[in-house]
Length: 186
Image (cartoon, rainbow, N blue to C red; front, side, top):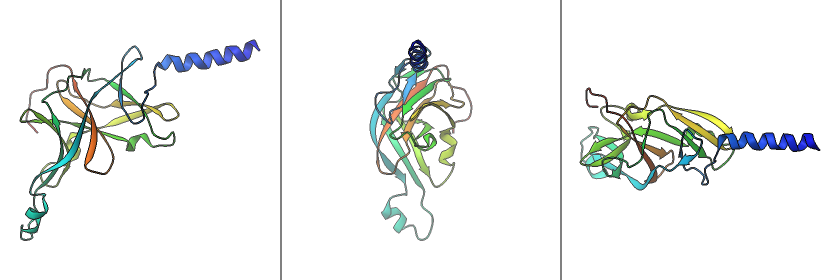
């Protein structure tokens, strides 16, 4: 009996060592160094078009390919949530069998007219992949994953976008601490 009680206690300590599990499904949270979780800025947004991607412009472009840019516009030039560029996130998936790599995409935001824009599609110019952040995933327990973004830049704004179809999105936002690197504007 003592061995069973001891084994149960070890398993409980193992789960407690990770600290908290997000309460809500498909809601990424900041994993702080002490194992506790913190919220990201959360905004509802919709995908918008700019350039010639509207049907009228495409219909009258006389065979030329019209410029098409789809983006999510977010209120405010910067997030009140600031994290270290080595931040890690945790999320609980809808289903324990889900492939975590298909749930979220992290994009660097572009600041335009005191708004943040997260580009999700570009037909001309640079590919949207230029602003996409590589992620690595670690399974914590069934359906719960730790996300480690690769190469976040200091002093930069980012958006975590659910990888779903449709014009309406909930976007999770954060900025990194430090000074933004100098260089060519992309």
